[in-house]
Amino acid sequence: MIVQEIMNKNVVTIDKKSTVKEAGSILNKNRISCLIVVDNGKMKGIITERDVLVAIDEDKNLNKVAVGSIMTKDVYFVGPNTDITDAAELMVKNKIKKLPVIYNGMLVGIVTATDLVAAEPKLMEQISNIMLLGKKQSMAG
Image: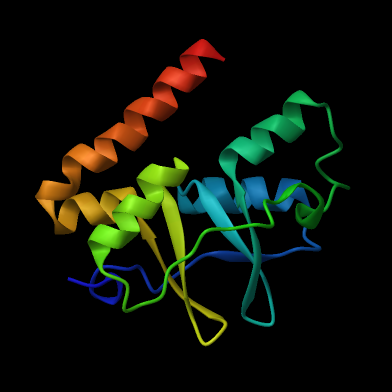
């Protein structure tokens, strides 16, 4: 099975000039945990709910700080024809839960750990390792 078969094509995005406050509102409104930062359909980065929480903790002015200044710029991604096992291995290796899907330089979807588990129950053990590792790190940190 390949990523294209299970990816979400309706990716919620944000412009890098938008504020962190706007990002937080979009995350909350859509009940999602990340936004892909784009410029003319091309991925420039990713901002997660954790990034927003860090900005709050650092007492940044969320109405003035641009998403582009706190986003992660080096984002792991896959292509639509990537085997889902390879996508899962990339997630496990890099301790991430979401992978943008890029085709010809353009954002075409996103695949999450949840998508992989729903598609292939045998991947559940690999994905649960990501989830558990994240919880253990947050409890220790």
